[in-house]
Length: 349
Image: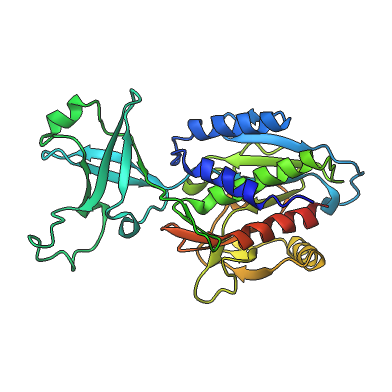
């Protein structure tokens, strides 16, 4: 059977090349809609702007929730920023979109998208960023109040910046800097969650290419407001009895997952995953000889949490390839991608 890892990585690179911070996602969802259509599916854009598609009608009868329709969720909105004000010196002050940490974003190149569709470039820097001038450089705490975007334009006043068409509310997109190394590491901003969205695309292609119809009805919902907490709150088909977020697996001190494994989340910041779903995922991983870890994420929320908070009555869990340096310059590995894909195949049948 074909190995879909390289296909998944190709789709991930395409997704990562499309700027899509929360609130500015139409370009990436246009790409998703076309990609699903090319595979022979009938995706639809939700009112909120996400992409919902049924990838399997299912073959069996539903006698309990474990056999019922399942919704796989991923998200293509990323961290980013918005212009909050223009200074008298012609620099831009920002407010974050999602959890973009200013310590991680410092010195990053960025793009400013105006309401008229113009794009300008700049760099996110500490105010007074010259070490040879600023004696407090090392001791200054990195906050959005103390940082700014220097535009790559000959401007030095607020009026000159406004004359470019830049205004408060414009979207600021940070460079992803995507690299895939010969040893199989995937390094980029925004692997959360474009890497796992690419895995979902790979799974949808696998079903078409291999002419496979799993027993369960399967939907995929690629959301666009996950990073700000409400991506999975709506557009959930009424017959869904289970939700599985396919997002990043956490890698760090106190956790077992590595970048080469798939992580199964037993509990996140909102509470435990459904016990039976976690158990079934572990069983499916062992059956397919998948390299996995079960972990507890202390500071993590997902689209399934948002859906449950909105009142959805469904079993739930979260899986994903191990990703290190989350919400920074992230890193995963091809083996983690393959293990996540293989777990999906084994779990969904």
